[in-house]
Image (cartoon, rainbow, N blue to C red; front, side, top):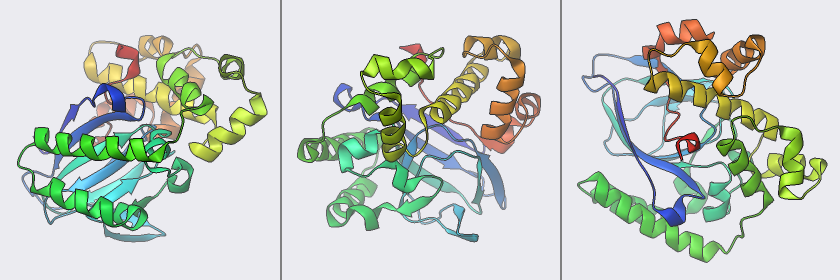
Length: 276
């Protein structure tokens, strides 16, 4: 297999902030340049390159090698990733509101782009990253990571608020109605919209679309025999036109074409909250 991604759950204390950890190998046989489309999953990825060969990403209309330690913000459209050689990484996948909870960095500042995380967090992060790369197993990397994140969480003293609750409701209830959210978190519609965009970077409705399509992808990945109409209905879609429109906007292709050409995509919906 040319690309391999293995996922791991975080500890209970970090689950309000993290989706999961994963280790990945891409272009494993180094068979020339590979280009893939990455599907938005509603999360932020903090990626640590474990070898000297990195992927190439586009930023400000220029292609360049990605940083050693990069954070990929919440994307709203698919984006291209190029692998010239074998690339091996370890990643922390943050819930969009989780990065702020641990590091005080709003996801809205990273929307639809990537940055060098060392430039954002500084020396203490670099010390941790260097130690992480010295570990020989993913279990040891996760242990180091959780110690670092729990220390930052304790130091940040940022309280979870209605944005965290609203985002969690969207992830857990595939049929949630956006107009019902303000009442469930005891805040006005206008304030919820404003603060959600400030912290997450997009509106609750847009976030719900990404979450629903990723649940579709998770179900398709786990059950090859299930049909698209049943999957769409299960994920809260009662209109095929809306489902197809959302699917194409988020993945870049219509559902049938995506299923046919799925090897061209990096689609990592993760260990979804729907399975809890």
